[in-house]
Length: 396
Ligand SMILES: Cc1cc2nc3c(=O)[nH]c(=O)nc-3n(C[C@H](O)[C@H](O)[C@H](O)COP(=O)(O)OP(=O)(O)OC[C@H]3O[C@@H](n4cnc5c(N)ncnc54)[C@H](O)[C@@H]3O)c2cc1C
Image (cartoon, rainbow, N blue to C red; front, side, top):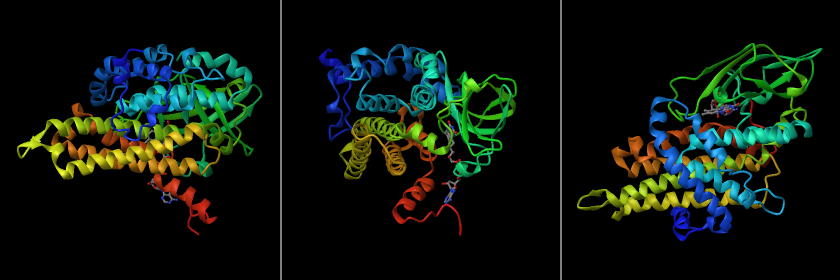
């Protein structure tokens, strides 16, 4: 690696120096990713965000970078380290949360579902195509009438037939659905207790997808409403190791850290933009960066980044094994992000409302992250139940 390439991978907002633990090979890969994002993806961002169009074409070139399976990254088990995986997510969201979702929804969420829920035969048949974006997918759990209470309220049903299953129901907010070949639909087994996962072709007869319009955050990520009216699915399209919400939580456990990495990345991006602006913008005859009230905000942002990165890096060395820690991490990561995005927006003043200064995008997209993967209230209730032994999800 050339010396100037390494400088390109600087993280000025990481004052504690968490990134120093990356190996030279990992830094080289992340540098390559950053150069690609800046040159090829950044120019697409504002037009797509403003028009509400999804730049799905970024997926192929990102897949070609082999961020997930470059042999140069291999550890002892031939897989990239968890720390690298985290910084890869951070690098994507440092540019833009939507880019991280368009790419990570596939290689993170969809791939993990198949790896953790699929049979060995399914994994052998599909994994290479999933990595190469030749078989694309997304995850459909939320329903119009059931968000936070989906575990108890799941209304989509799966009825067994002689040759497979028939699905009925509705899904809402499903990210990347309209750019996916397969939708991983979670449904309750009719006449049984099981919660099942099916890979349903998005164009299967009976599937109706429509993009949710007029969204004020993550405008360039398309979320869909889906209606399933008697959709026939073969038994081979069912992920056999998912039979309950416990299994879904298990499958996603390793993924829950992603939220902390995305939060840290967005905060680093917001910090870079805010610092750059504060150093250039002069008011009262001097750069605003020289005023104490601005410095206080910049320091608070860096402190927020340190807290978020500390949690994220911890998940890289100590994999999440319980169902409570991810909730604690999500609520801290989302709180810190929300504060950081607001402070950065504030530093940039009126210009902070313009997309070209980056902070406006982080500001509104932080609201999306605040809600998905469990709202603050849901996560508080999960942690509160653990602390007290009393569930406060429903009124007594
Ligand atoms: C941008 C975006 C992308 C998404 N992507 C996906 C996806 O790809 N796949 C998918 O399946 N889902 C997805 N979701 C759905 C997301 O998981 C839900 O929005 C989330 O679970 C919250 O559900 P809800 O929006 O219906 O809010 P509700 O559950 O209706 O909650 C409304 C408010 O009430 C609060 N509340 C609810 N219950 C209680 C209680 N017992 N006590 C106190 N407060 C309570 C909530 O915290 C919240 O503040 C996405 C959502 C967004 C916004």
